[in-house]
Image 1 (cartoon, rainbow, N blue to C red):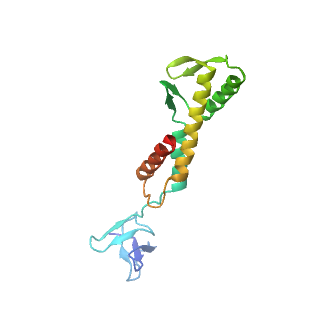
Image 2: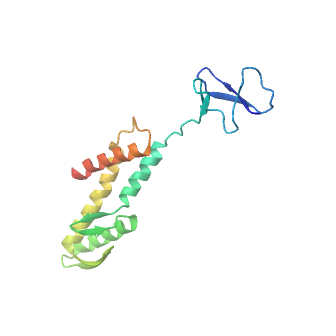
Image 3: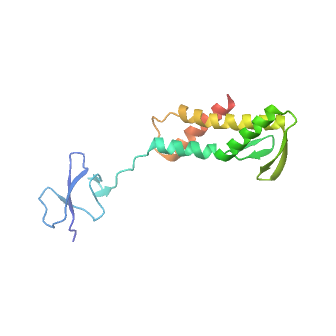
Length: 166
């Protein structure tokens, strides 16, 4: 026999619970997992847990950060785009701007690639554009009707494509 009983409000939301086994008459039986906030369906006579609210600002930041760190491909060169790589490519860019004959062996996932000054500048521009597009996508994503991660990811990706294409 169920020992737990709950009280519902006018919207059939659990607002109180009783574990004494002798609840007031307006309380109804409930299983152990039912807690305040759960909704009772009067037709099916079943309870359902409340939906966990999506922390939209936290989630879009995670999506943006994953995109920033996801890497890019420029003219067949696969580049990491994490913070360390961004710092290193900017340092190489400074050297390349100071010396047009500057070269470097850049390590990619495919191995080392020799880069001349012009290529270093072009790659650093591409990484910069990628990072800025990630922030622009975050800023332009309409969060109004987003209710799940999949919808948020889709909306963000669409804004990223617009930003990187601009």
